[in-house]
Length: 343
Image (cartoon, rainbow, N blue to C red; front, top):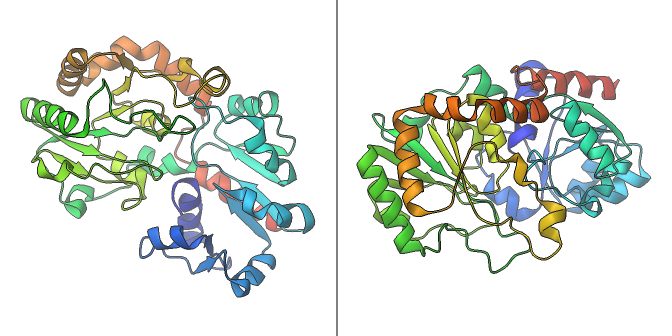
């Protein structure tokens, strides 16, 4: 219950009391989101709860919908997918997405992404460009008092480091430039001291957190499993560091600097070419520690230098990913499509 699903859920809660909504997940995810979302919950392992699910008018998924494939195939429930990350850096292969062919609609962020779903992934259900609901609050400046809420220094600029997970490369290190955890933390803590910044390290939901991080004064770990509302945190970030995470496309609506660590895609063998899109990395790509330190300091002090250097690539990528739908109204379009489906 985060991202696009959370955006739609919040919109319904604020605007339409006639819709009865639930949050359905496996127990481990219900535990993660306990007290972090307001919907009544349904457990995938509960027969009683699954009877409630079977009586639904619409089911909106953003991950793991393979678990509901029989309901999508055999019932009149209308299924909608909003996915959980913009597929432009790490392409998922068709076997992962073919279940969407039993869906009523798939909502994507732009017409260009619609073509990607049709031409590359072979999805045959109705694909509707809606924009990307999870970034509406970022665009509209809706978040308030985030630093106070999480006890993050008020006077310092914020650097977020957010690598993706290992995917099918079990030997891949999540830390850059051959550093181990101790060396990496000392390295980024020193950069934070020199630039008067504070570093947030955000581990992916499928990755281990850095256990030693909170020993450093200028580093705070805020893993996805403990802080699932990504956009809330991005609202206070001044510079994002990532490798192959789709988080970069959420952050790009703020026109703030993005640094990509120059590592190979998180796949092995033929999957590197089939499942990755290096051209999607629209910001600075850094291949060594010295350039990393220099670039972070430069763009923290002069974020406009980043925009000057990368403006053309940023604008081209934003057009592909959002196609003008980064207007802060995507969630409203979600709701309109939902009402149309309910009838």
